[in-house]
Length: 463
Image 1 (spheres, rainbow, N blue to C red):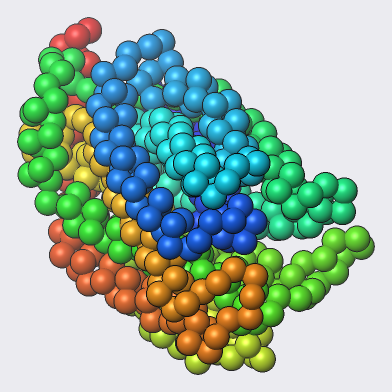
Image 2: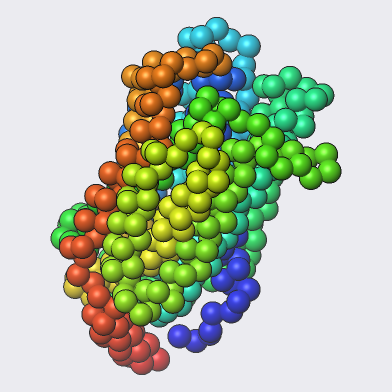
């Protein structure tokens, strides 16, 4: 490799996931309750909308990956999309949190349109961003480091948004209507995200290209992906992990609003943090600690075992969460910290393992399709998010949830299940699936050395 990876580049790469995670966390935590309690549509209608729109959205990911693999510019295959899609990404986010003066049917149609556009924009910028990890360095350690920076910044972005979002909404409500307050808050979040994506474009580089003799052949790329067993295992584990996270995130504000009875927990000057805000902040902070510990722990026991043990730990702790009462806020916070620490560990490992799966495919077949591998991986992320988000809202409807009223004991019990046993089961499945992953760190070192030898031979022949 002609030039070394710098700290600035790692930070630049991290900014991209800070931007994505800000929006992701808004979608996961604040959007469901915005739709049901502010926008004014039922939980069942929102759950169905999430499923219908995300089925279309999920199919877009591999399409975007194929487009990226066939893009050739002076900036590379993936970086240009960070520049050109950033502004539309921010604008559509604001439109999604805009409440039009329509009837119920009109609002539902508006929600379908804006949510679909938002997910398409998310795909158009996030698939190239994720794929960038596979071409910035051929070294596995560099990739794990990039993935760790990515996750640290991702959780930093999440922390930022959970700390400022609700306080900004509450602050704007002193001057504007509730609907306008959400719109203005999203405008500020969107502007920050746009700036972060542009910094990622400016501070990163693409260093790995497909083999010179490789011809574009979509059928061959898809055939190779279909034979990539490690990728399928990561697909299953990733879907289960995202279900685990999206259910816990999606029901959290309902849990605090209707069971804990959200109130002021901390006050700083003129800013008040509610119990739910502290809970969400604590989760993101301990997620980040998990991310930091992922590399040193996996260096000792390997990526697969680290992933597996973290998910089993999250499953057990989630089961205990059911027995935390609304009077014991400290037990709720303690379990949140421990569960989030376990969850944080697996994310840099997952994306680093996807990069390994791309290398494995090239080593096995002689063809490299980084965009397709990562877009299909992003597709699995969307699939888990889709299933988790839809299940959350359907279960709320099943348990008799009605917006802005006192909930029945049966509804409260259902909300507690959704904070504990439901995500716990998903975490258990994720841990069981990853047991079958066979690309050990030793095996990857051999694969990377072999690919590097081939690259050096190719450079020597071209020179």
